[in-house]
Length: 465
Image (cartoon, rainbow, N blue to C red; front, side):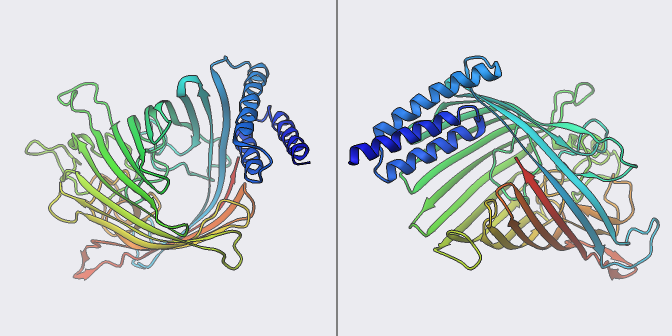
């Protein structure tokens, strides 16, 4: 009887796998999950499950190649993306009048579109690209490097699409406890940091190396290293002094018990030839860094005053509750933080945040609620990398910005970030984020410290595919 039952389930599993041959993105996940379930129930042996996987994979590859016309060395092709609609509201506490009325409430509707494709090939190669919406940056040569947002304006004018990623990847080692992978091109950020260090939309350009070692089932080490180009100077006295970003990050992930896990990391980043990152040389999206007002004594106008060589440490601990009201499955509670110190500057050179996170959205019925307090001093890090949504009211213009006062994101900001997210389905999520921030150095006007308090509310609806 057991043999007959096993045969029946095995046949059913094979039939389901065959039915999914022409669904490239879902094939691997659905078939593997089904086979694992059959093994767990004792209806298939591990060997039988592996044989079914090999048969299904072989059939899938043949059907996929015949259906798409892909060459035989392409084993999988996946299309993915997301669309986000956003309501963005800004209100400042400063009610002093000024030219252009920079203190009035501002409300705008925006969207972000991202769509990409990934090709997985034999011999552990991968190539991919992603397109994104965005608005032209300050120099008009491309899209904003730290935002894919596009504002509803200009009488329904047609909007821009830009290359967000375009990369090639090789993973020569991915078996046993070791992992080694190399990527070249324009890529998703390989470093694991919060938005205090890199905005989530920033996709650097260069070469990255990722390595990992699984000490055992509960403990693992990871190394991320990268060499990124920030600008290319093709002529003039600084033609060979291209600004670069170099960095390395070591991470340790641990699962101490079925309920308790932790992660921690330490990293060193450095900018070379930062003197050539003037506001006119690269997109001037954020503000905050100290800059020279005019060319003198060997310095360029709007050149960065300080160097950037920060050390960054982070840590978090997660506890899993067996259940929690109005939440399906186990419920994570995480406490974490991050600290950054820039040894390249003598003052205003620290950044840090601490926070608590309840739940995790993404699957139908799941939700999350979080709070963080964040401080990012003026010269803790390069202004054009950090979160483009975390800003404050500025009474005095930054050098090279061309405005007198108003809201501006970047460095020199401190404040509160509260976020709530709920997933109505696996594909659709809604969320709200409230920022209340101030400038870390608001300045003195008429003998009084400037009021720099700023409220910002983001309401998001996200469809992913």
